[in-house]
Length: 452
Image 1: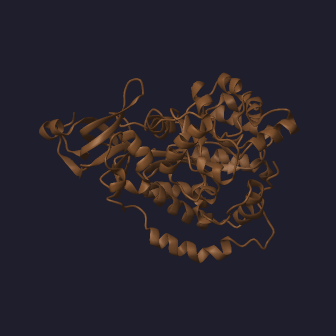
Image 2: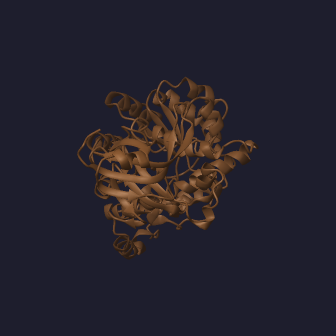
Image 3: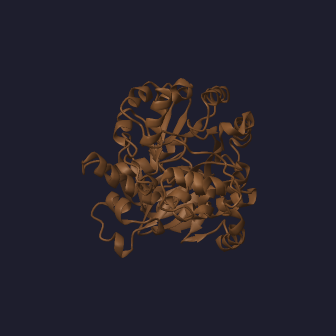
């Protein structure tokens, strides 16, 4: 251990840790030493107080639980600008009548404002990393670099844009990979098998393998898409991805509520690293009949990360809520109160989510050598007392508003609920001025057609 002062010392907290079999455990009265953006040690608070290093910054976290920062494995962060705009509609009308017409108005400034508001919301909710799939992503990358959060970014494209859509996605991914002091990772981001041709999907797979890039896309989002794909192509969306070579890449599939039994052997044979992101709130809102088949996917060893999707469909970027809903909906769907447990839900929110976005070796747990992405959760409120089962308290009683402090790469981005890197009132004022032009649909344009 170095004798120079540590960058940050957190004392007096209970720490969520993973044992060597990846089971969740809690270490009480602990201290976390952070140096150069990494966790240097996790030990007993008394022992660290007696022998530990001086620190440039100290946080007394008595009464708080230290968790790995949450990961939002699939969202469209700038869509917070459309929060509440398209309500109580089926998927097809939601896209065609509201969202895709409004998105044809988007300017880079709109994307920047939306990204700032989204990052503020996520930092306040204990989300330290998000996987984003959207347009004007240079702008999002600049916001990420400035506000200090971690992100996995992909410039989305449709085949209707012609070859330049795919080329722009590749160019973005190569240019921004490893930027923001390594906090930004990138992916190729075709929209979905129903908006991207087989030829473009195959070309994307080749580019991903050639350049060592992962791929992030929507697929088998719901059962209707699977049924339509079977009727049109004789293949499920997952089989379409397989035929295009995408299951040989590191692939992050958003939603997957339309994954059916015949897809499971296909996914099991995949030679790449496949992961799925689940965002259950939106599935309830759209009245989709199914949810992500987490139990079947986990039996294949496929990590399922937690997500919110965009706030235009989910109304929130609160992964805390996704964690509780995932546990509850899985119990209901499986008809089994023993699945998914609070400890399993915390595993999905931490290590599995980190793996889903390709960061399983660097974030997702609080352990020496890991990046210091840490949140401190206050459990002194009446709604979280008494604590009989700490995992259950965290998943089913605590709320995102109980996150007191959010740290990414050892930098404190929120301390005692105060955001330190973003000015929310200024963003909201500017966004309100822009709203009339942004939401206008009188032009009759839309960026794409949804016809699945």
